[in-house]
Length: 233
Image (cartoon, rainbow, N blue to C red; front, side, top):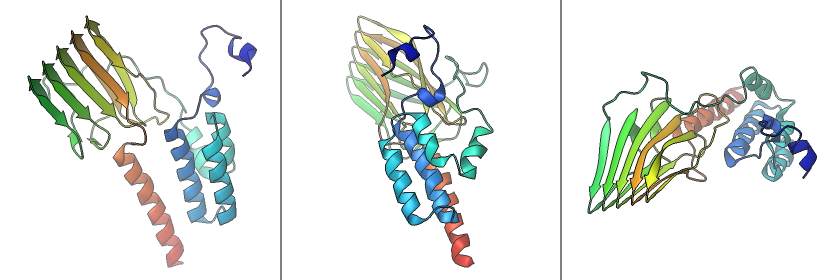
């Protein structure tokens, strides 16, 4: 690693191309290659060679090399590749009242599977455990707030790998931990976790291998449409 290059400006944010590639980044590039194959822009051998390179790429810049000659890559560059996500949701965008409450008192409660995530969800664990799993949820809103309060209990929150995640809260003789991350997709949902852990535990982190289902549906639909057009010719 070139330490001098990374230390040339102390505290400066790295360029997007220098960021370590995530599984979501690789999936995004692989989708472009799959579209190019369906459109006849790549041969089967070229597609296989590039996909192998994508799997071995370490940074976002290395990934972009495999699609730089494809129209889809330049269409995406027309919009910012990275937009900082604010630490708090947009004022007035989230209602004060919760769309749903998940409560566990001397018990356990969970919300997971295929369900519609509202704009605000409250989770309370008192001598109990709560699990909120958004990895297969349908995001109808771009901003989602989860208020998590744990008293002698535990609240665990799992989100898809390709959303942005922010946390504001703390612990009183407890643990409040949010694995902050930024999605490379400008229109990806943002999940804000707010709350306290009092002699308890609140954790929020991405679930590896799980992506926002709606985004996957759009990509798959586009590929299926391209394949149908080729078959109809």
